[in-house]
Image 1: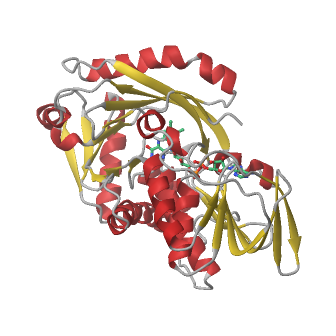
Image 2: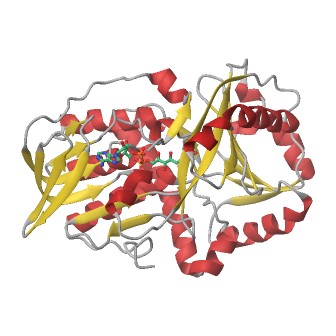
Amino acid sequence: MELKSGYPFWLIKDGLPYDYPKLEDCLKCEVAIIGAGISGALTAYYLTQAGFSCVLVDRRSVGLGSTCASTSLLQYELDKPLSELSKTIGIEAAENSYRLCSYAVDKIGEICKSIRHVGYTKRSSLFYAAFKKDVSLVEKEYEFRKNAGFKVKLLNENDIYNSYGFMAPAAILSQKGACVDAYKLTHALLQYSIKKGLRVYDRSGVSGINYKTNGAELILENGSIIYTKKIVNATGYEVQSFLSKKVYKLHSTYAVISEQLNNTEDYWKDQALIWNTANPYLYIRSTADKRIIIGGRDEIFYNPVKRDQLLKLKTKQLTNDFKKLFPEIGFIPEFSWTGSFGVTKDSLPYIGVNEEPYTYYALGFGGNGITFSLIAAEIITDLISGKKNRYSNLFSFDR
Ligand SMILES: Cc1cc2nc3c(=O)[nH]c(=O)nc-3n(C[C@H](O)[C@H](O)[C@H](O)COP(=O)(O)OP(=O)(O)OC[C@H]3O[C@@H](n4cnc5c(N)ncnc54)[C@H](O)[C@@H]3O)c2cc1C
């Protein structure tokens, strides 16, 4: 499956920072993790910390699935506003989903600190009304978030212009948010966990699974076998071949990064993450090396040929979107890329057990994929350790 194309910035910037071997033998472990993106890496980190003997395999090179294409904004705010999600799944579950993502934003920061990875930066987050008609949505959302205990501020047109330098009729400012380079973080987590006993093999695809009475055999494309007690499936948007039921749709999304600018810290207050109410929404972040990323302009199809044909046009459109908001900033596009991403009905991930024995799924779909990866890593580690996790039903396959 073609998960991405074009020039994902992190892949250019970081290259292939580490080598991992291919699996050419048969081996045994307690937990086999399939997929070395950010979900597999975080789960491997947690499980290794908990003392499990883990093997992680990927059919590509590490991180070269969706993770290297991610623009890596970490937000507690889901694709579905809290006010709307509450209607679909009930207020308690909706608030808990938001709270868990909020927790995940901080927890990823703590993990980065503990593994001495320096690429995590805290950022506030500004959610603005793209159109006048969306002001009531923003106001309602503000009330819902405030009632749920989130630290939010409602901004009017003047506030937005004075602090952020663009025109919008209303916005919610949240203090909680962050950004990373998910590709680099994936490698950092694996390097750390390898020192604690994790075994990582890339270019080692799983072509089949035999379920036995006391565990499973993972059959690799080259015939090697992994004998394992448990499996974590963190195969991202390619998981469909492992599932009997379709739980998500694939869309296409686009991102553009500018050339380096002089002083991104002066362009708008605190270099907040910026996104809006449009459908599909636009989002903007800056990077440590003084560039600006703008993303969005999603299409509701997967077809990679059609998706890639649109890259030139989408690059132009996104560049114009940025210039319309910030005409004074000299945004010159340098790299652009496109990727598929999975969307679920309620914007929530699928985490935990399904029909297959000994198997746990870590499937963070939607715009909050990375925070969902963290939540999946914690829930699955609890389940495998035999501990109760009070949120294990929130993202279950039964919902
Ligand atoms: C352009 C773009 C922008 C995004 N922006 C954001 C953002 O700002 N914030 C955010 O939170 N999320 C964002 N996302 C989503 C986020 O990137 C994903 O949720 C996340 O990267 C998924 O990570 P993963 O590890 O689950 O999947 P992947 O990174 O795709 O990893 C899965 C791995 O499984 C491997 N695999 C699949 N099948 C097999 C098999 N049979 N055997 C062995 N290995 C296999 C694949 O090779 C792959 O490496 C964005 C996505 C895109 C495309």
